[in-house]
Image (cartoon, rainbow, N blue to C red):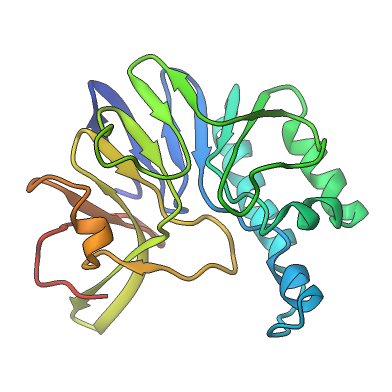
Length: 225
């Protein structure tokens, strides 16, 4: 199976191989940590020079998901831009692409630690989004996990396969909360063995690996990242 379905607080959700989360009943597509404009931000601040293609690549991948699923609502779970200036510095092609993706649907930018105050780029700007039993926010709250969907940590995990060890971004979920992988092209990741992630989940938590197809492994396993 290319994707993995799971239940979160009684809601059926789908973890997509791209790292996007799909709530079919509500027609909501959710993505985390796009980090649009990261190459531009690094260059602006005198950091590592990266090829300036990550924004176009990320938007193209998002466009493919939108074309496949036709969501009524898209929720971007914070750190959609690498900083507020990155949103202002979007080139015309990226602006046109983004405007096309937003057209005809509700688009919600959840505030992240990288982009707490975005300029007016269309869509709605919110601290968090409540839909039925689910709460969409940027950073998980340890004591408020029931029905929580968040991003921020960019979880990844390494597993041993017949071809050798592979490392992939992943979802982490335990039926009560879910953390999404980063959707952006130029994003690192935090090992699922890190205490910051391990401490957020119950003993039944699993990691859902992304890639050509999803695969599921226990969070508390011998896998290392």
